[in-house]
Structure formats: structure tokens, C-alpha cells
Amino acid sequence: MNERSDTPQAHPHLGGNIRFCVVCGSPLTFRAWEEGDGTMQLCCAGASCNNVHFLDPKLAAGVIPTVDGKAVIVQRAHNPGKGLWTFPGGFVNRGEVVSTAAAREALEEAGIEVTVGPLLGVYSFPENPTVLIVYTGEVVKGKPRALAESIDVRLIGPEEIPYDDLAFDTTRAAFRDWHSWITKGKPPPGKDGNF
Image 1 (cartoon, rainbow, N blue to C red):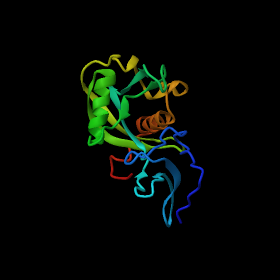
Image 2 (cartoon, helix red, strand yellow; image 1 turned 120 degrees about the vertical axis):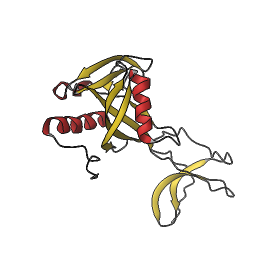
Image 3 (cartoon, one colour; image 1 turned 90 degrees about the horizontal axis):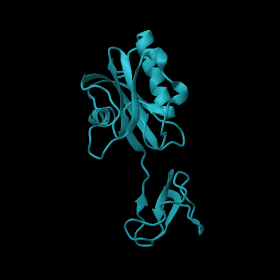
Image 4 (cartoon, rainbow, N blue to C red; image 1 turned 90 degrees about the vertical axis):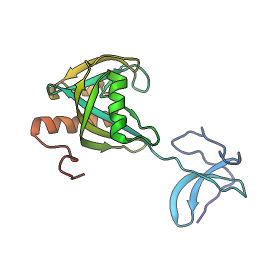
């Protein structure tokens, strides 16, 4: 049932930042968008429009590139997480292949060309709009260095991961999996086809 209220609700992940329909300019309401579907969406309140503004997750890609068994990590130059550490990663552009985005981010953030290896994992958390896909990788060209998106770059072994200084929950989860893979010989899930 399409439950409509006279008082528009704000989307819980936007804080009311998107308030008008991109098609007709009418106010948006946060409600169930289709009968039988309990999914709440931002829906146009215009009588003739009824456009649904779906808020899809943000897709990000990252790679944990290694040099002689040590991971390249970068210290973030910008918020969110400014000053904290992560592996190279960022948002995937529309139409871009995910593994290509991971390699591009390594070049942009650390000045390195990487061969993207097996999938390490896919990470998401409640209330976080970002879904992160992480690959293993190997540096094939360039010396890791700080560029415009990073303050510093380091090489770390699996026992040197600075968990308290990592930028995001997804970063910590991926590094836990990488640590397990390196120290226990557990392959990334994509290596043998199991996801």
C-alpha cells in the first residue's frame, strides 16, 4: 500500500538535503514507493509525475597493492578520514569497470601502476551508503609516493597494520581479511571462485 502523509519525512541518510523532484520540481516525500514493496524511497508528490528518486549505494573500489609482500598504505589528505590511513581506493565512475577503478585509484593516490589480482572481499555496514569492493594487487611500476590525495605513504607488513589509525570500518574489515590471507594462507574468496 502506498502510504502517503501530509507531512513529508526526510530520508534518514540525507537529513533532508534532497527535497525536490529532479523531473518536475515538486516536493519529495519519503514513503513506500509501490504497493506490496516495503522499500521506502524519495517519491515525487506531484500528481502527474510520481517519479521515484532511488538512492542507490555508492560503489567504491580499492586495492591492497604489495611490494615484496608489504602493503602500500596512504594517509588521507582530505575528509572524510583526513590524516588517517587506508589502502588506495575511491568511488567508481559510472560506466567504469570496478577493477579498472581500483587500479586508477592506486595511480592517483600513490603514483603506482598495479596489476589487480583476486577479489579480497566486498564490504558494507549498516547506515553506511558505501559498498567497497577490494582486490589484492601487486605494484608493477612506480615508487609509492604521496600525491594530491595523500599526505604520506608507507609500506607495512601484515603484523604492522595500524588498525586504530585506519580511516573506515570497511578499511579495517578488508585489512583483517588481508592479514588472514597472508598469515594463514587463506586465499581471497575470489581466487577459487567462492564468494
